[in-house]
Image (cartoon, rainbow, N blue to C red; front, side):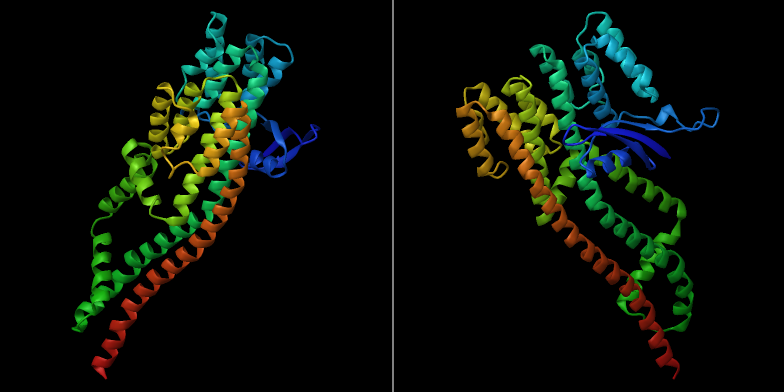
Length: 404
């Protein structure tokens, strides 16, 4: 599909062009790699008709949708339009049904005198806490256009961070799936054909062959059970990991991997410092900013720590002193910078600077993790396939020796 994009570079110059991709997210990745801030990305369609394959039932509001919404809303309000007029333009330009319906309902609330943040607050499951928090801050300060511009920069950086993590893990995940696929094919289709031959030979099979033959028998016993097990595994990874217990379980596993644990901690620190810095710069109080940061961070251990920090601040403790109670989660560098920021009144700027600095460290950790995972998975795949091959070849040699 061809997409028409529009963005601006570091000098503020508008850049327009075409790019062929499967999704809008790929176009956004392409623009960010070229150091372009996306303004709009529209699909170039030849015609609209019965064959339009857009199924609103499976639609959802993505981070890219929120990024474009924020950027366009900021531009229209900055141009002098009222919020209702700005929403009118966005509704007319939006093709995604779920987004159009959401904007129409938000606009109806705004027309009835409700604030914009309350309108989007009704869709808290679709919009992140930092989005709603900065909207409230912008409305309270009377500088909604400036707050939205800062929010769009925040969302761009957050999207770029997620894209980096996904990109770094794509190849290892493909290797893992390939390994499982190859081993499953050998156990389901190759070993069962040799089972009868081994059974009728009368040769005492080695334990490794017995193990894989037993595993093969389990997999080929009932394909209905295999299908049920596959559904369970998919559910386990797609749904269970989003539950509170699932997050604890996966966090426990990741915390046992040295490089991955450090990476998760640094990603959490980037999100925490960037979210807190942007919310405080928008005019929110420290407590409100910390509450939104705790919800946005996506790390249960940090959420619990920040909740405790909020209680300490309410009891009169400074942010730096409250954070210092968790030295394993918040490094000394961050605590020192927060202390300086509180003394000089520049805490929000210092936090954003810290997040940019740590994001570079995240890039390095991602490279380290990829460098470790790729050969490790290749080694595991080789060992598994080699073990199955060994379990087949060994009894064949014994069978040949038995008849010679």
